[in-house]
Length: 442
View (tube, rainbow, N blue to C red):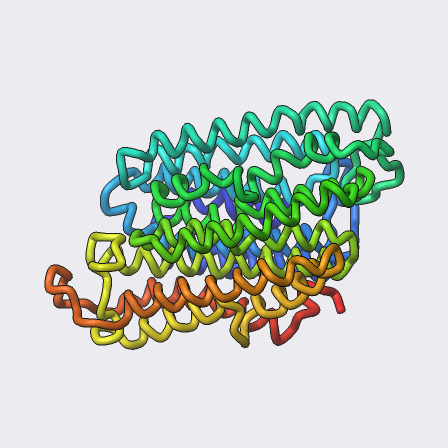
């Protein structure tokens, strides 16, 4: 783990330019992530740090996203303090890497809460709009309020089982009451977020800078799914009654959020609400209580992180051209920059699980797992897939087709940095479906 944390700390000594940072990260951190993946069998590095296949995948995702965040944040340097933003990104990355590798449940909780501080600073200090303070307050209230029951559940778990190891679970908490499952998983449900607990997410995405939106969508939201995946091995399985209601809330909530997407005119709001609808199947896969559902949940976590951050990077590219996030003002991109229009098409196609994308294999796995619980999920799943195709095609057509807005800059050119950021997100999406064993182990 020090092979990753020490090079990240040395980034503060390098010039705050994206090309220098990316070369440094690629040559030093990438070999360390390869070493982690090779040793993906559960291993204890010391009394508090351990790595298995799930944590190795998310650590590699975090390291893959950081160079793209460094490249996407370059616009911030023209206006505000670049060193401070640099420091916040590095601190947040180190917290996330430790968070995905700690083996004790209480350290797990401390790092879960610690990630809130740099995220809040990124939104409040480097956000674009005056409403960023309200978005920060929403983030604090939702996270802290839901985390208090988690702290109580961890205390009860440690008092009863006298063990807090997340990787080698020997003793199980035998309480079968559904309320305890809700208490200990509420913080992760809010962080995921599940429908009803999602109101902080659109505000945070809209008000955060592009680098903040990328790291929030790609890594921070994965803390919720990762937490639930760890906790299910420590407590007894959820009862069918609560499982049925949660699954129904997840699927019909996904329909509502996707219908909201079809009426959105703000590009970032549309992507933020679609994020809530896309992550819905994580709960469905976990509630199936079978290995097929667990690997499907991991696959949807990875595909969601890559595709949503790619969409936010593309939206920022349009914002830099028109200084607006409106779909009505951003149009005619196919005439101005056909190559960028092609990248938009690939992202929107992957968003609706079109091949070749890892989103396809993830949704196939999770749809089959959802039918294990009840066959009634087929109706809402069909509606969700139809509405997802509708708003994805609407997003692509409104941005790329039509006449160029005369208010936009007529001298539109391709910036290599933008192309690199988008292709950096899309490359793993294709590679994973070619080699699915990177996630599913078989």
